[in-house]
View 1: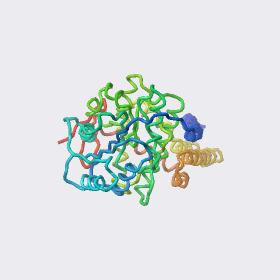
View 2 (view 1 turned 180 degrees about the vertical axis):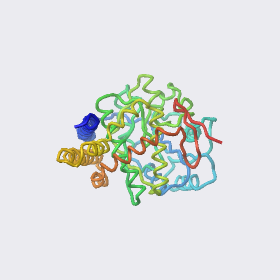
View 3 (view 1 turned 135 degrees about the horizontal axis):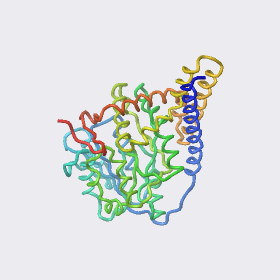
View 4 (view 1 turned 135 degrees about the vertical axis):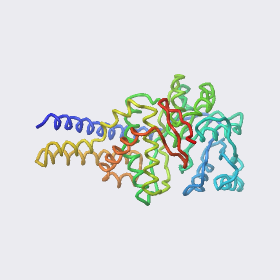
Length: 383
């Protein structure tokens, strides 16, 4: 056996062991989800929903945040401009009977490079003074009535917790683009977070859902401190971690409703995500390539040849990858993910392509606008 084949075999083994660890961490996460931590007093909470455009299923997504099993909360939808379908839809929802705890606002504050944060800074100005917890979430999320309690519970029960964040699963995938998006999340994002959150402390948060103690966030610089960064969600957790506040994983898995874009648009979206991760964690990004066990098994097979050993390595790696993907999907209670776990090796190959694409260019396209991403993660619109 050649030295190259031996190296590829070792990398394949390391990648496979990583996914075994992810499956075990998935089981532990599932068990933690079932624990019920008692809370004596629920703090008043403000849900901030920055909107841009009118995506598939937006109405149902927004309404799910209004109907929560929580004693005292408000929901604030915000858009950059009054014109457009997003503000009109949000305003219409808030005008319905029984939705007095909801309001729609428009405008931007500041001149930061990140338009979402400019929107959030304007929304922040409309939060009730007595709100103690802020919950942020993306517009494509659709939650159940117990969502707010699951997000706020860790903050309410532990003063050392400054932020709570969630992993997510992709639902309603009815196109190849939607399946590609789901595979990327299930093959790369979720296993990585389960492993990191189990063996060490989280240092960052994820945009699908974040709950933060308002006082801690304000003392850490607030939205103004992150207004120039592409990965605003990452920075929310990062600035709190730097102030020695813990960032913990919520037991709630947020459903993200796929927009079912075409393959080209989905690939561009995932490529922006990949470049965002590289800007935030360049060292970790480089070593994460070792986790694509299906890719390394395929390369090892090519180096060893189509003999008994080669087929054992390729087949064994693919089967292990499928089973680990099924365990992770089961931990998230994702029926679609359980079915898609058969495609976990394909997800590895897709993620490796995105990883390569993330290395090549320091530019991203976000909502049709092109931005330059600098080495420290800051962003600026390209005129």
